[in-house]
Image (tube, rainbow, N blue to C red):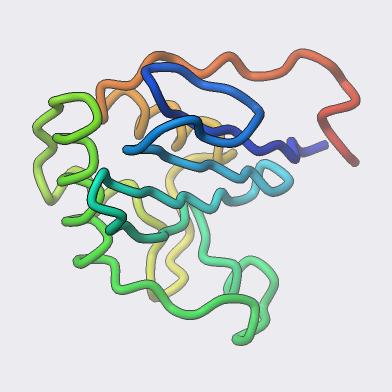
Length: 138
């Protein structure tokens, strides 16, 4: 059974509604298998990357999502974290979070573990994962 849930971070807190300010981060967890991360900075620049797997590998469908430029997105996320929380993230650490652009299997068994590592690295408050069994599908 995997989690399907969207979260947003803005104004110093997490919510399940949309962002209320910039910078913001949107997190869309799909079946605990992968997460889409969208981030925006105050100048409206931003990007998108995936945690654990890129959808094209998760679904074995090349058209499921465009390939990610991992180095560029890792660099963008480090700038976002600096603006949003003041966290200084090493580029190599940010790259280690992103799904492999070659489809190499991830180290974490579920994406929630990767999300927790990303949150800690970025200096964000911990995310409270749902305990409601209806948030998870089988």
